[in-house]
Length: 330
Image (cartoon, rainbow, N blue to C red; front, side):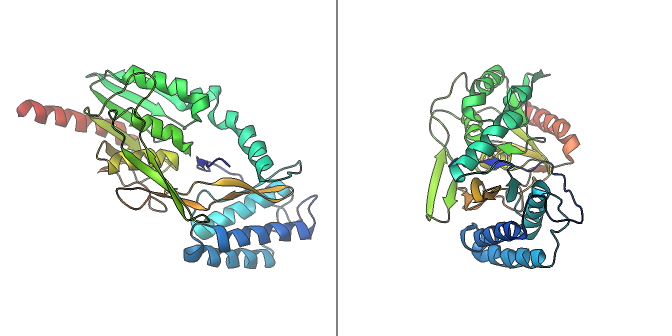
């Protein structure tokens, strides 16, 4: 199954005093039981918070707190919202499928496949919102999402090639809610040389295994390289894979992070079928950075230069100008 990093940018919670249309009370109970079981046994923080969250979820269900959901979609939305409130984990969610799902592989195909174009597609230019050469030969790259490499790799490679010969680079992640970690790692690879650099890996709780990640020794197009200044702009909305990029560059002392603390989502997820019509965003893994031995879950990436997010670009330019002056005075 494919691991996904993505933030829930916006969800609409629906409510009405009736049972979910087309769902028997037993179906609703089955969904709650399956989610609670995941929290208590498989959730990556099961010992720390999952077991308590499982009990609280079941208690909320028994108290009738989800009875207002008028259909399966609304029921899933309410359960997902309660999950995130109980755990503080922005990657936990439940989704409803009108067509019955046979297994978890079919769930991944149905949900991931259907949403790939909507999340990452050509109408979003595969995440590349803007490329600009600012005064002083400063490159500016606004990335809004990290698409799968097989969808957006050529577009990102072209963008990185355009900014490769600038004297400094600003990467704007203030509106980036995440996406696919491989693309974030590819972007990081353009900012180093050919020697591999350690990036945040993933610890999987059920298998007790750690998968390490690295920058790529070869990239398509031109590298920006390891020596020129890089500034990364972040905001509270910056989440998941976007946070991974900022966190990695900060840990490697490769970029100056400017803006507000980010959203705090370091747990990737997978689609798991828990009922013929319901899919859980299953969180069994967490990020582990080999340098910090930690991650940004719940706390976010803390900027090197703290400033309100709408002032982050101007502040980065001021920092660059100050660096240039100090270099000239030496």
